[in-house]
Image 1 (cartoon, rainbow, N blue to C red):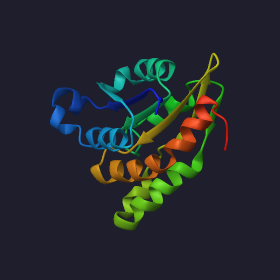
Image 2: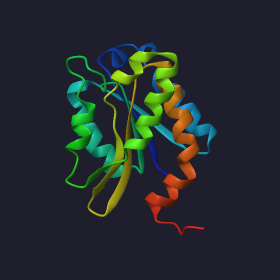
Image 3: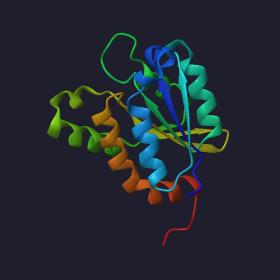
Image 4: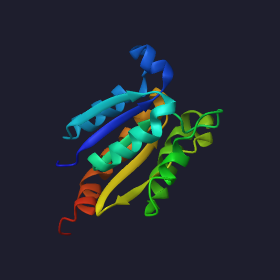
Length: 161
């Protein structure tokens, strides 16, 4: 697949100690198994907005890890919404992720993560706020890998069959 992909972890703990980054490796592995070349990056929460803006400009698919719960400082959904006036939420993706997660852990329903398309200067990028838990990452991987052919076609404007 041709989607330029980034998994962006937003966590001071993971920046200080890479072993704290539990979700991103699982997401990257799932996407690579589906045929994508995946880049990874870790940033501090105070650098998230700048890193996210750059990521959206340079990639077709950006998955963030962390910062989408209800804890103080969890601001990734707000940052995604502020990326551009042309953010189009695709609610069904995260609804399915939360549904899968809630079967095993009811707290999955507390995620405020978003999924949607950001359009800037004619470039379209699909952004998804993944949870920082291993279980949440597995759920995102399961949902997203099943959608990749359609997502690629929609984002890159390929012909429908």
